[in-house]
Amino acid sequence: MGTIQNNIKAIRKKLGYTQETVADVLGIARPTYTEYETKDIDIPFDTLEKLSDFFGVELASFFAENDDQLRDALVCAFRTDGLSVEDLRKITKFKSIVKNYIKMQRIEG
Image 1 (cartoon, helix red, strand yellow):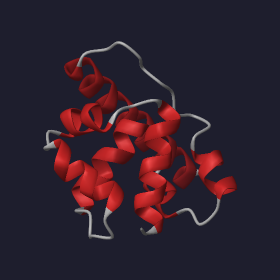
Image 2 (cartoon, one colour):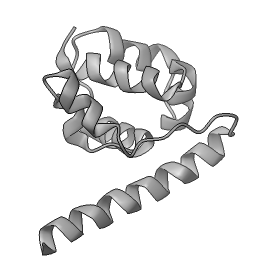
Image 3 (cartoon, helix red, strand yellow):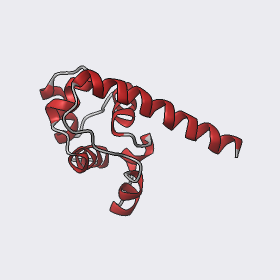
Image 4 (cartoon, one colour):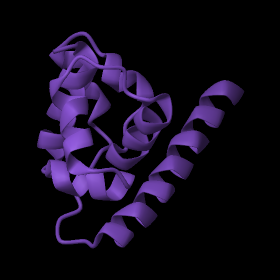
């Protein structure tokens, strides 16, 4: 399994989501999502962006080479237990806005 697959799985588990929940929020079948975590396949870029927004981490987190980098990426991520898929999708949009705002602040420096 590749770095991206390992990191996606580690982040999902750290945040306490099931594969089914992540697949539902992304709007894909659970077997498809399972393949993203378990097979060394190319994950579509738009799916990686959606995962990044859902997990509340930078896209670069999926490419982290060591546990320290991955742990640092999860500092701002948080769990959302007991929410509906629709609620999780709304929170995902909010996380995306926050991430983009932070990026713009970095650029403006």
